[in-house]
Length: 471
Image (cartoon, helix red, strand yellow):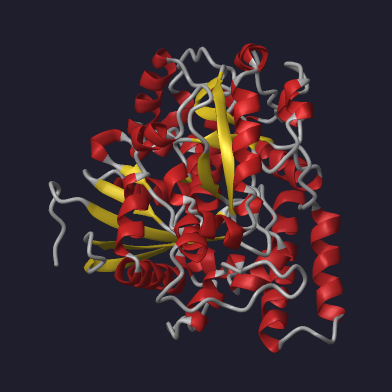
């Protein structure tokens, strides 16, 4: 089957990464498969690898989980600029729904940061050309809570007794082949299979949630101020009975129109009603719901008395608390004046969410991207935003270090040395940590032969990198 621009399609994707911090860590492997709305494949799958630059140390734990080493990506891969350009082109095809399993909270953040580092718009692909994004992990949670029939559910977690929603556990429970988990393409195919299972067994639930990728649909259900209570299914509500609770939507955040301040109606309302602008967001039961992140929200009518008992929800008490909150006009005024405090890091790689770039700089980005690598640093553009100049140097050095002149190469080696010795923010992965973790794991009698191979490769890579930047 071939792709047609006017046809709505789903592009399923997954990343394997060299760490868990989307601002700092790097993509190792990308895999994707486009399907039609019935989840039939369109075209061949895509598998890409990303080379590492010399200013970065991978997390040994991530490498032992995925089995992917720096040597492999540097042999098979492309520079980050070319990788993210290729991904962005695929994601931006008209009428594309980009989807995955926990992609909105994890993988999408890596994509946004890679776009930002390489002077591509971090958000446009999420809405332009009738494109959107979706994520089935909360669909799985909602199927467990609301419509579990027809699906085999994995054993509960031993340590907590809570349900488990790991992709490997779900495929195993439903006899779906997933040999080679933590390989991006294997995980993409497993995600499509789980989506197909829910679509087949609970089609109304699937279609309902597919519509919630549009935040206009979400706002129809989550109404402010103090609209009817909503059943919200989310990871942070996980308990033995499930992942859903009744909530009250208070008001949109003053600093972010896509975030709604909400209250969990299973909690005591007294601290909420006494909260100030400074304490409100720290009050137990208060959280923000992002309407642009496909929240699984259901109208109150879904919560029958029988379902409330099953989910461990005291419906009568929740409705009473909602009435208390709704009559408290002072709370609304307090909430409307709340500004979320964002703790930044003094490093441009960590400043995607500090502010938007101005229109004038955005136009200059087009000139940067059109220029040849060897010309980018000599454009002499007068940037308005102080982040751009250091980002530009790093952009060129990370992707095309061969075009740097002698002085720029010395500057880049100095940056790489300092970066790997003293990473920014709370990042722990410096040389001492990197070497110690590898040696500790290699000394363990509990690691497999494959893990030893990965660690040996990592150690060799570290030695080569150390010579390059300190030699």
